[in-house]
Length: 333
Image (cartoon, rainbow, N blue to C red; front, side):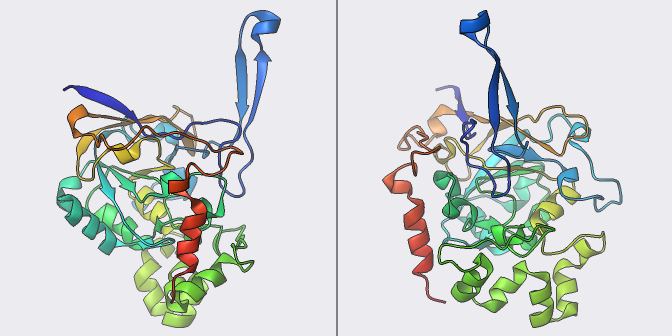
């Protein structure tokens, strides 16, 4: 058998699910077939919509080597492209992926972490199956943090592509108590998601996501040990630390990986193609992510992905966001 292409991109459209404070894409026609025999469309939207790339300038002023953080056009043309491996995770809802979970996923896939140097790493947490305008996908996503970011740096990754709402756990973002907006969104229970997390996982576990709580509980010295390298370059430590560890060391990221990701078994090597727009002074870009892989290495038991988002509810009964949240709130701290 030969090689085949596998689409790893969520379809884009006006009703695509989007991050909580992003604008809705506006799609209009400049010309139509009926009027002029030509179809020409225009799109207005945030470039971090759907499956997309992040450049260093998206989240920081300076990289760790002291240079001004690079824009999209300053990254190498193959920054997001190369030999790739998928790691799969079987974690409880809202879990934080640390170096321990990454080491375990490598062990389960038969992957030597040191063999990942210079490669693209695709994380399959299962969140891509819940891609929808929902609390399940955005508020309660599985995600990474500072330890995962350092793990990616330690093992010399080229790019990390995640199937979740962002490169960081949602409580490390402005959905929680970080960032200038600091939305601290209301969760399914009517309480802020920060309070929900404390009740489910405890105050000490929550403190990893909140600079001031971490200092209050563990002290300034412990905070400096955990987040000091970020603070030293003028960065709020608990605000998207995985983004900043990665991008600040030249490891670019892809968010909202999707499509037929489940067809690629963990540990299988393949060619990953992803190209952002050559956007001068861009902070990121929507992109098409595709795998080129030996056909006989695909998991043939996985059916082609069918999308039903955009007003039609969850993808299927098997991938219910409601079931995911019920499992989360059934957890006892």
